[in-house]
Image 1 (cartoon, rainbow, N blue to C red):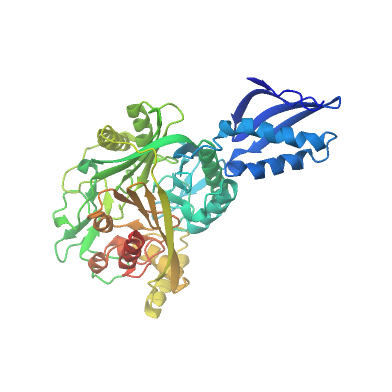
Image 2: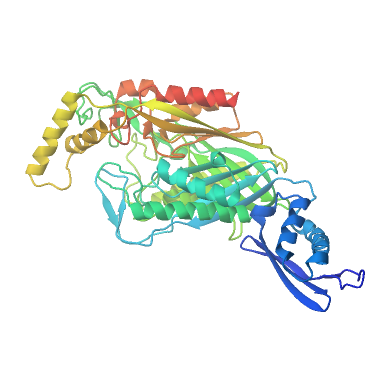
Length: 541
């Protein structure tokens, strides 16, 4: 396209040549101006994310500054202002802003090996990547408010990583840090980011992940385009099972690492054990999903939520079933390579994929069970997807609240017992602790150094009539079900904006079991779930 402005007062008009081009978030247009025989070639490069909210006065002021030192400054700023008017339709100025969305999957696979992998009682070292790890980023903008949803292929993402990534992304996009939700999938085959049991965090990877999460949010923001969004809920009760079981009194299954003998339930008790009575809680079969499309109906992204801890049976490093689900959804909805599939972790603190009441599927190939789960959950999600109605003018909002929660600290006798166990292990020459008593003795000594109180960030996001709750814990399923009661368009994201261990209800604390055993993976006060639910409820009013 070529536009030429007529000559005025003896000066040659600026000539705006070429079609506007957008690449990598940068807007480029060439303007040629001839004034008093001088040729001025002007390349205007402006970051759209910085100027999309400028008014016309600001734009002209910036252009005048650019041309202040040129020989044609006395007249050219007028033509520059006119030229800007031709730019306005290209980026949507002077038009009512509608809902927009942008999505991007940022590769966060490590580049240095070997690297620590947590998720077990002992550390593991990965030497290669089985399948890529990503930070899957979705940015939404209603014209007044922007939010970002990020799901990382990590076991857990600590608060310092989230805060640093939020800060960087906020600086570059203008999205308030309080409007960014960063969560972990809880894959157990990803690099260690926070000290859990005998796996130390990899500090280099932590810094690497900070920059990559921020890059992903910026990239998704740069891809904002007019869109519409809808919410749906599928059901898949076939892949979720409560992993805490009530067992017969006096059973050998009721052992704990502290020698107290007060537990009444056992996590992962083994299939068809003779002492099993019944699961100690319910499941949540919901497969919740936000579907985002262009105004023309092209699939852009699906942000899903399912209350399943993880699947496993995959080698390091792997994104587990979460990535398999994302790819299967792309196939089902007919998305192109830019389509973003996302599976966030719901309230799965006491839920896994193992039915301990049956004998199991027998021997399986690596990754086979994860593929079975991904296919089943994707089909349930697709069934709901086909019934979704869309809104191209949803309103967005975000709220956060810092809660100061108590920490369950060990008593002096418990510390003394733990130190004795660790001394004995050291005298035996063991660098890797063996058995639950030794491992939890190490946790007890670590917890003795913890502060008496910690801060936890809880969050509420609204996308139209859909509500997303978030907290930095491995949240028990009963909590998610309670928050959904009477709120059909609500789901909860666990392991969000930090890591504060398991979140059992007070009733489950009374039952005991692994998820309640005091450690760096379970340390909040017994009333923490009550206080978090109360905070969410207040924020929803």
